[in-house]
Amino acid sequence: MEKIREHIKVQQERAILVGAYPKDKNGQNKNDNLAELTALAESAGAIVVGRLQQRLSRINPSTYIGKGKAEYLSQKVQETQANLVIFDNDLTPGQIRELEKIVKVRVLDRSELILDIFATRAQTKQAKLQVELAQLEYTYPRLTRMWSHLDNVAGAGGGTAAGAVGGIGTRGTGEKQLEIDRRLVSKRITDLKRELAEIDRRILREIAGRKDFFKICLVGYTNAGKSTLLNALTGADVLVEDRLFATLDTRTRKWRIDGGLEVLLSDTVGFVSKLPHHLVASFKATLEEAVHADLLLHVADASSPEAFDQIQSVQKVLEEIGCGGKPVLLLLNKCDRIADGGLFDSLQSVYPDALCISARSGLNLDLLAQRVLDYVKGQNIYIRLRCAPSEGRIITFLRTHAAGLKECYDEQGVLLEGWLGRNQLPHLRHLGAQPEEVCL
Image (cartoon, rainbow, N blue to C red; front, side, top):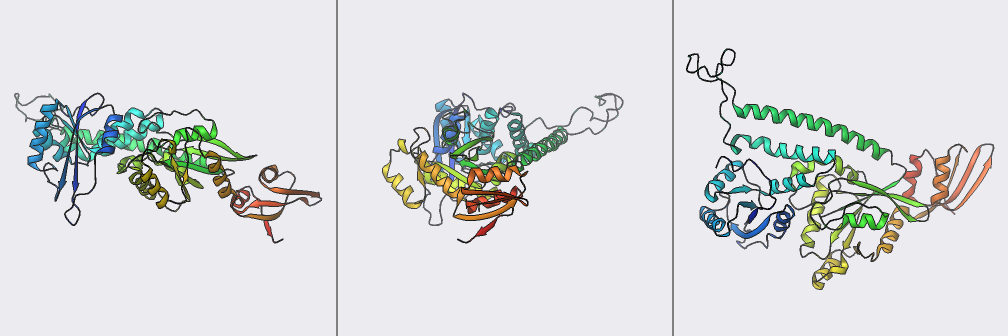
C-alpha cells in the first residue's frame, strides 16, 4: 500500500464514484445524485465503471461511509476491476488511509479530482502557478498522515560505530522527513504567493488602465458556453471545447455594441458547486475581472437537467468572491438544445428577466446587445460641460457616445452639449470632465 498515493492523475483509470449525503431533518433522502461528479471524472479522463450512493444519519469518523458500505465498495472494486475510487465529498487524510486499506486501490476526494483537472488544463504561467499553489495548500495540512515515508532520515542512532549511520557532523537525533517536507512545501507556497501577488498587481494595473471603458464579465457554470459567447459577440478565436474547465485564463476583447460604442468583454474560469476554497483563493487574480466589472453576464446552460442547481452554485461563488452586489443579467444559453420543455418553463417562471439565447446559432444575440446597450447608457439626460480644446479624450468620448452633440469654440475653450446615458457619466468623469445636468 506504500505506493498507492504517489500519483493523483486520473487519466484512463477505471473509477467507481461514491456519494454520501446526509438525510434531511425529517429523515427523508435529499435528491442528490452523481451527475456532476460523473462529468468531472470523465473530464479528467477516467472511465466510470460503477456508482455508489449512501444516505447518512451521521458521518463515520474513520471511513466517512459506514463500515458495511466500505466492505461492499471493496467487493464492487474487485467485480469491476476498478483501480480508483472517487468520493463526491471532502475526506480527511485518515479517512482516505482507512478506505484505501479496505478497498486496496487509490481513493480521491472531490477537491483532489478538481485540482487534477485544473492541473491538466493549465497552459499559461499564471494558471500553472495558481494550480500549483492550490495543490500545495490542499496538501500541506495533510502531510502528517498522507504518506508512509515520513520517518527519521539517516543520522539517528547514537554515537557508537554501529549507530553512526552518517559520520561526523551527521550523527544525532536526525530530522524527520515530515519536517523537511513541511519546510519545503511552506517555502514553495511563500514563493508562489509572491509571484502571484506580482501578477495580481499587474492585472490590477491593467484593469485600472481600462477606466475609459465599460467593463462586462462573463461568469457561469463550467461548460455553459461562455467562451462560445465571447467568440460570437467579439469575433475572438478563443478555445472552445465541450468539456469542463476548458478555459482557466481570463480573456478580454472589445465588443462593439452600437455604432462607435465599445465595451470590454471578459471571459473567466467556470464554476462548479462546492468549488475548493483553495482554488478560489489561488485564482484571485483571474477573478479580479469579475470583481471590477460594471456588469456581469451570467451564462447558464438551459439544456442541462441541473440548470437550477448550477445557477445557484454560481450565485454562491459570486457571493464568496465579493460580487454579490454586482448587477447581473442572466442568459439562458443553449435554448436551441432544450429537451425538457417543462424545465425551461420553470426556469423562465423563476427568472422572468432572463434572456433566452444560443451562442452557437446566434439566437437573440441582437436582443442581448440591446439589453446591454440600454444598461450601459441608462436614462438619457442632457448635459453641458466646458473643456480645453487639448482635452481630446473628453471630446472624442462625447462625439462617440452623445446624441445631438453641439460644439461651440470660444476664447474660454469648448462648450459641449448633448444627450448622454446617465450610466456613462462616471466614465466621463474618469476622463476629468465636470458635466452639468441640464433640465430642458
